[in-house]
View (cartoon, one colour):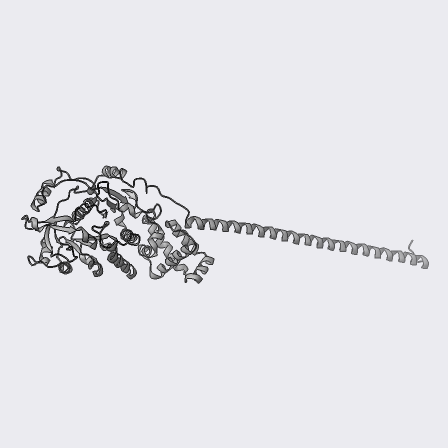
Length: 508
């Protein structure tokens, strides 16, 4: 079994030194690492070489492809390539021997499902801490989101996609529900709730809606090997995703967190069970709140015991906090430029992180190296760092440059997960449950409104009937008075007539 992966050899003066070969011992490859250097110095090629070497050793790999160049790892290099002569010359120069071209077994992934298999997570899996970072919430707003998650857990409301979370927040905005929730979990201010809803809308418009949902990623699909024992290289197409830096970095952090939570402890294996390359690593630490920084440090510190090696790829080592840099034992430092006082400090800082080599000055070497050259320091079998060596990085066996769209499509069709994640599944969750509750409540309100209308109508009829009876009574009383008056008048006239007859006063 292969116990090391070959990184390069021969120092930058161009003379071959096979005994100066630089290799990474697989047994300590889970102690994490760093690939740093200015733009155009060869970081991506170094990443490609390491990814394919791990794959050949039977170790599955995950790497984000920010520029699209890394996709060429799926195809063998070609003798017709313009760099073929230079690559074969370098192979001879560093004692590597004949350069054999071959591609690595590759699975393409894409959060947006355009240039690879869709990759999704549920809202519940992401959790309130990472979502708060993704939406840029304040502490108070993060508290409201935590309450929303707790309310969902206590009431059996699955949060799978953005519409579930949106519906939950709308439900919490109801005066009755908000009063109940505030009394049980803590105050939910309408202003804070509205702010969370606004940020959720921004997140949705940024394309995150396609990331959240089901079927969610199964981590086992990242840890596949071929029938001949090679590890699959999982390439995340991040050309579009990198335009949303927070979504990019939060997604990768979520992935690391899931690996940390789900994988069992295995101590120090003979080789890693997965190697994770985190390109543009500075985005992970930009504007991260203290709680999130603690989580990052915890994951980086402890995930190696799960058999996972994490390699950060960035321009400058100072992009990473000291607490994380201290965990990175295997380092490949490409050239840095020192034109300004700040850049000069960065060079000094990078040089100080290596075990010195008396043969040269590390600080000067960092600024003098050419493209494809690096200062390399890996861990010994016992875990101590080797002295830094000036190294010419080995040429890749796979293609330099991106794969074409037809090549990607063909690779995707033969993928072991073809068809598994392509169609979304929308099972009953918070949105459906709360919608049914609203529908039931609306029907009950409609029934109640109809009942009240009937009662009002009956009362109105009864009142109208009472008024009619009173009117009739009044009319009867008027008639009786008229009859009585008429009778009284007639009686008086009769009496007068009789009296006139008696006294002789009757008119002729």
